[in-house]
Amino acid sequence: MLITLDEAAKRLSAGEIIAVPTETVYGLAASIYHPEAIQQIFALKGRPSDNPLITHIANLDQLAPLIGAGPDDFEALCKAFWPGPLTLVVPAKEEMLPPAIRAGLPTAAFRMPRHEAALQLIAKTGPLVMPSANLSGKPSSTSPDHIEQDFGKAFPILESGQRSCKLGLESTVLIAKEGVWTIGRVGAIPPEELESVLGYRPSFGMKSSKPLCPGQRYRHYAPQCKLLVGTEMPTGIDVILGFDEREYPPGAKVLSMGSLSSPESAAQRLYTLLRLLDIDEIPEAWVDTNFPEQGLWASIRERLHKAAGKVDEI
Ligand code: TXA
Ligand code: MG
Image (cartoon, rainbow, N blue to C red; front, side, top):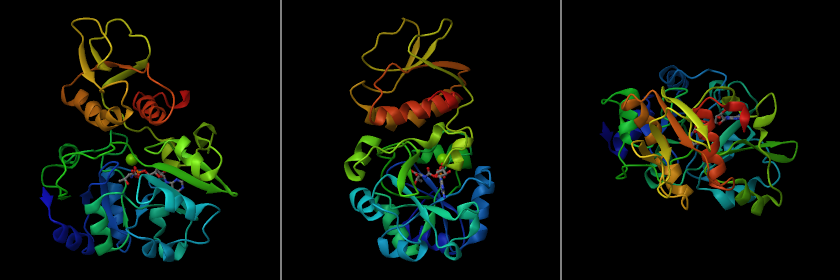
């Protein structure tokens, strides 16, 4: 159910949860001043309580009271990428952020989204936590239809005038540790772009036995459908997530991620296609992962591998 900006602000200030569009994916929003609403978000998503949430701000004035000393290059990163799809994990002013948001950690994650309606809303309500608006472990939501699929037709969604999220892939999470920034989750901003600001290419902390982002421990983005990822088509498959330029065996049903020249279109379609597999009750599909390694493609590959349950192979 689409609701206006005023209605959305009223509900959040009364301690309710609503869905809010951003340029990456839809978020399930609650005010940081309503700890009971934050608890409810964990329950609604079925999210483990040790997986912390991102606090979204509309301007730097809202951020200042919530953080401790900003690490090296913090301001340069904010200036270069905010508003935008970069989440920064920094020391938190612990008394200002309910422990459930931080999962008890001394750090907290922050992001200023590049989305007009979201920014207007957050400017009115104050900071909002917004995990992706999906059932835990399932593909994220990039359109109001996806929210309806997971939370029902009556669930309130902030109206934005847009049918789908512009980027379609979650923010990149960058974590400050001992003076160095490390990627906790790959996402809409590729490491190559971060390098231009930091002077070094941040590494991806996923490979260590203890992931930097608690969320990385859990299965994510996964449809019911069994996904087989790889560059060679397995036998006995009749549904393919593929590309416009490729020729696949006749008779196979191809769900297109778009052109191999546009990682942007593959990112934008990704979660809609993964959801479609379940709507059509497809038991098994092959994902053609014969695409480039760099830039946004690396994030798309990580999502597809996770969706297929192949967490350790990246
Ligand atoms: O694009 C996005 O980031 C979307 C939109 C709605 O803004 N939000 C989103 O939230 O993807 P969520 O909850 O699905 O993912 C948040 C990620 C998780 O992997 C979590 O573990 C990590 O951020 N995170 C949050 N706080 C952290 C912290 N203090 N230390 C390390 N990782 C943290
Ligand atoms: Mg998520």
